[in-house]
Image (cartoon, rainbow, N blue to C red; front, side, top):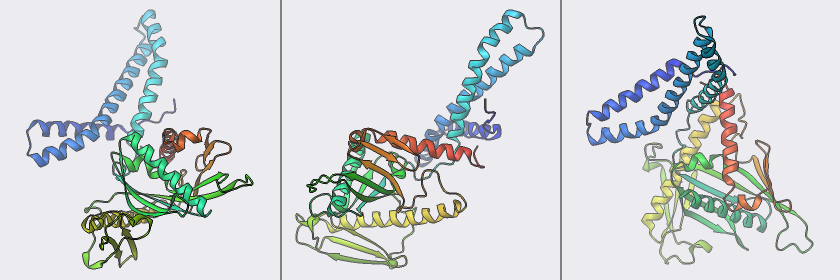
Length: 362
């Protein structure tokens, strides 16, 4: 046993809050209060259940130890307690770890939908094709999760794929599952246009931003420069010849967003504002994260989008995540979206281990 235990005063405070929320619901509050309390209670329910299980295991171990320490206990009772004590210690250790994970600082954005941005990097046409492969991978992964994917802005590659694609991924806990995907993804393979069979290396950059609500970002309309234009390029072929495309510039930060995927100017403006809020919110999150982590680099990556995070090697059928040194020889399954969870779970576990090892772990 490692001896690390969750702080009892914090556990008691959580259980007291859980009881208070249940009491509030029992009083039959108004609709707004009922909705707010129900949301908090739903989030707290699994934590309270884990704490109750942990405390039950702790009390059980204490009872067994008391039997062993009591001179009045007969030999048969002591033998029974001795047989059970190792299993009780293991159960307490496991439940203690589960509770400590639940008490780790939570990213407030984890439950949100996300904006996914993929841009072709070095490698010319092959990089655009790879960007298309990545978008396909995330789209298939989203389908498996029951999420929806809706493009906001598309710039197609000359021979296929995308020079850039920005999409909204909507669903439960999208950001929690995709947030470690930000960074440079590298591909090693023989391009279809390569006659000599030489392996080329290309790259694409992925950025995952939590979707921001109006309450997350305060945008002054007077700070915006909004322009309308005709949709053009490959993404605009089937758009009516009206000025439906929207470009919005946030003058104080110089942030520019452009959306032309809808025929409706109103819908394009709404999508552009959603994208702008996400980018401004992400920039503020990044600034705060940098301040908190100024003296320590995260094990699973700094979030710097210039950082190479993963290599997809087609000749060897492998995917390697460089942040945690994990290699999977199931490239086809990863690209299909089916095995992406193995990478996501490993990255999440590495982040949890890092937090547990930090000074402010519970």
